[in-house]
Length: 400
Image (tube, rainbow, N blue to C red; front, side):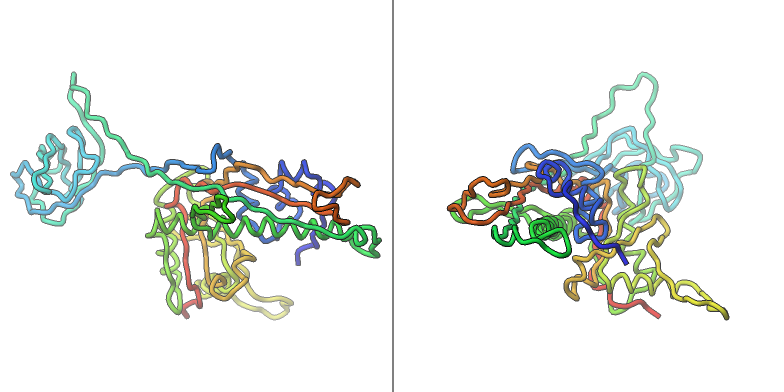
């Protein structure tokens, strides 16, 4: 069992909250309710320059096409379904025959794409190319004193997001503050601790489930941000899966395999964090038990298996049970693979505390006989590689 969480005065100092509120969540509450917020802020954060925060993300181009009409071994023009990122001078492999071809010209007429090629651009002889054959670019080759090749521009995707303001207050009467407790750190510390945890939890929920919006409330502008779930849905929808009544290891691998197609950080290219609910965690552990064998021998005083990591063919996942996912049965069956190196939470305003009546000064609230304060944070999400993240809904049971 985790040790009780104790907050000392360093956590309560406004200047400390302002500079490292999220980092303190790890130091003082490592088993707390906001692990994504805490982990992403421990590795450094960016600064937002405006309430509208836009950024670019792009994926490397790998030119390839499907042949749409059969071509003979002597043909020097080939009809394909697209010519995205094609330029003269590229070398393609016909995957079905092993023949290399060089692209000389590219044309389009009424939506029909044609490339003029040099056949047998290598040691493998030209052969008939069937319709539906795939050609894949394997490099470029240019002659001596060649002219400058055509430029290739990979158009980035622009992701637009808004900063969101989070505010949570605490307050107790002057009498309560003056009362000496027999145990604990006192009502003031307890109330501030609750406020800090609620503040971090509100941010955590939005980092995961937030959806972007812009409107007004009380005649003032109000903005919300896209969280990780929304960004994956918008920019990497193929990485969202819904499990069936039971899940096998092979199905689990197929759900998570796409996150390794695109690399954000080569240092952690084949590793992701997997936030799970309790039910999903049980399903993963059951898949682990069913994937191997174990024996209980005479004299053992404990039994059972508990898996904190698991591997698929292309990478590894570190399992973290997220307390937020256990707040209702539907979220409990959810798993979210997160590439922490692609996730950031730029601040427009870092967390700060504004108190009243704390040092004997008059409270601004009509001279109320009480003390309290408010935590305020304004930030957004920046997920530079949505394709490196994934979601699985509905993990209910493992297949026997």
